[in-house]
Image (cartoon, rainbow, N blue to C red):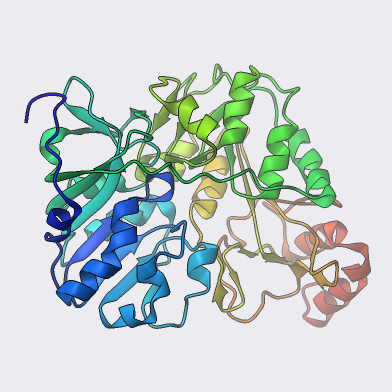
Amino acid sequence: MAAGSITFKSADEAFSLIKSDSTVVTAMAAAEPYLFWSMVHRYVKTSNTRNLKIFCANPSEPWPVIADDQMKEHVEIVVMFMTGVMRKLQGRGFVHYMPQHLSQWSRNLLARPTGIDVFWGSCSPPDKRGFVSLGTSNCYESEVLRAAKKVVLEVNPNMPSTCGGTEVSLDEVDIFIESSRPLPEVKPAPFSEVEASIADYVVEMIPDGATLQLGIGGIPNAVGTRLIHKRDLGVHTEMINDAFMNLYNAGIVTGRQKSIWPRKIVGAFAYGSRSLYDFIKENPIVEIHPASVINDPYRIGRNHKMISLNTAVEIDLTGQVCSESVGHVELSGVGGAAETHIGAQRSAGGRGIIAIPSTAKQGTVSKITTALQPGAKVSISRNDIDTVVTEFGVAVLKGKTVPERIREMVRVAHPKFRDELTAEARRLFYI
């Protein structure tokens, strides 16, 4: 294939690569392949494909293949991170969650004994050298692509060409098809007064020159708006979002003091506004590498003053963190929460922070609990916990005994639950 030239084929030709018993992996987030997800249900029905296994992450829409109960006769969908769309479909027999750390996604996919029959993703138009870019996402995409038996890419003019490890030679791809759908966008999560108060405590713990990983949600977004007086921050994060773009444009993020990838914003995927996608396009400041690299705790720990911020659903008095379920019901997934929390603590001057409102359900339920709900998934063990922040202050748990942890956690719990938590801790002989 000549450099810079592509021969497009039809979607039907691409789907002909998929047979019964096939395993397909699709790209994620803003790189989610639109034509695949909008058409696969029709192909499966007309071809009577059976036992098709599709691995994906955070689908953005209730695609027909997901919404149609009849698909369970044909398809199993394995989700590596839940979204609201997928959350509602658990228990219907064909949507299953795979628990694993973000850095292990590609390794676990490639270790499957049947192999990967088709990788189906999205890419930018080709450059004159004969390369396309996977664009916004490289969590597992480049690694799976190079191990798959067949590769299909949807060439989308809206997909930015990015730096890092996203380049793919034209001769690595079996079928290119045309797609022009605008990329999915996500707006920054709004934050409440309580979350803003939590953010104020977190910002106090972020020194000038720190390297940041911010998770998803209102609290991380509130933190992003409150860093305007900091200097020379760096970014080493799983998700590059609008907050980091805004801090870079304001001169707050420079990466001057970063010890690895100095002066670079590095992540495994970018997800946000159209402005963010324009910002990362052909921008040598931004590099997108596999999550096996970005979320490796040892690499994270090599950063200067690494600060990792994540949120949670509930935390028990001894420091067990649940960030992915409400009892037995899966909400999301562990993602990179444990890896970034642990990795930050390996950093000189680093810190792993779990930020959480003290209550839920209009203040009627304490999110600091004596015991996690039955079925709750432990995302970060108490052996790895560092610091917990609520709107009532900062609880440092690392290196402390159980009684010391109880006192710390009770102090940052909502006042109306403190006596009850203390009484329960005494009843259980924690203190």
